[in-house]
Image 1 (tube, rainbow, N blue to C red):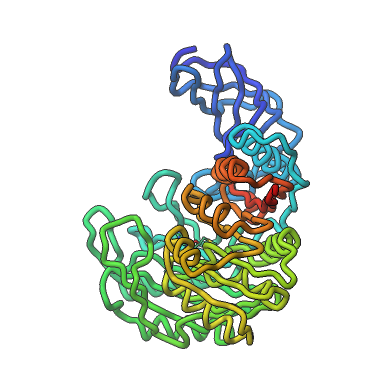
Image 2 (cartoon, rainbow, N blue to C red):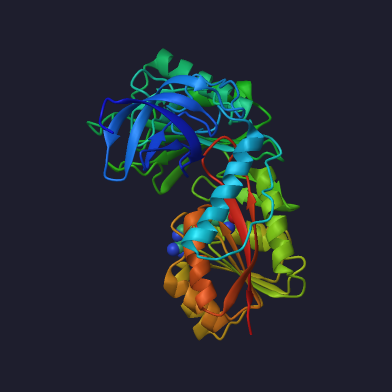
Length: 448
Ligand code: SAH
């Protein structure tokens, strides 16, 4: 096989990133925008030692799982990868992907529980960070790039977000607002960052700016409040003068209302600040936390909740548990967690700001043990040292691991199995329909 060859390929698998895969002359050929079950004419773009990349030229036989894609920027915006296949099939592929990771990377021969599908596959996100194009329109960065694909009405977002984008775009045009240019690191408005409390309907609008000020602020605040007088509870500037890819700076300035919005999850009122993590799909996060609580059997137990964000997991269990200790690295999130505990009347909680591995060591020095440890790390998973501290020093009866990356979960599962724990059960939960992402909750039990 060579570059520019045209081949006929049957698509038999899908990658973690959502690209179709077929096998040709013993090589894996990756073809974006194809679906398992397609037979396609493919143009070979690049050939490596054991794999190749191709482009879909013509669909000869369409997969039975195909559906009509309804989004004009599909596969360009860096978001959805599955809009061309049925949601039922997407769930099956995600479950299979989690299983393969546990079996192949973790080398653990255990099947997953059935994936819990999302309640809705559209309008499920409560957070969007839109970069602005040089023509003053909002959108998303293309995959592996900083080219803005203009799109202000993404169907994964709440409908209010599209209306807010349009209002801000009109204001940009009317007042000729200075727009940030990444190449020259000049101009002011970088991103529009929106959040919504799905249960409370509260909305936060944040303008991320390269500077301390944004001209014609009063006008846009008035316009936004005119359109959403009940919903918008917070309008803020976030100052980011750095020449980096990181979207948010550390400083926020309130232009209107509060410095946070509130949402309710698992009957717990949570305060959400711009810099705090909050699951982007509230309804499914609730289901995820309930599954985690079921795995943890937390009644009367002492819990340590590592990577706790605003404390949502621990707080959702605090009324049943004896004690909850949460650890989180972002100061603003820890402050939110403490206020959330107070606001909900919990007196059995403690939140610590720090790196999970360091804070865990500190807790050990204090003589803390735990009955159940919850781990909910970012994509890169847990540090080995942290897993050792958890297993050897806290030595809980159960570890419940919530993961947004099945590959690192599988790696850490193998590590935990080497430390005297066994993976008893795991359930994929779809918090991110149409995208390549999937969440998993896993239960580990101490062997002796
Ligand atoms: N459990 C929370 C947050 C999960 S996201 C929830 O369900 O909402 C992962 C969290 O880990 C983020 O809040 C992030 O700020 C935090 N984090 C990232 N690296 C960390 C580290 N080294 N130590 C502690 N927390 C960390």
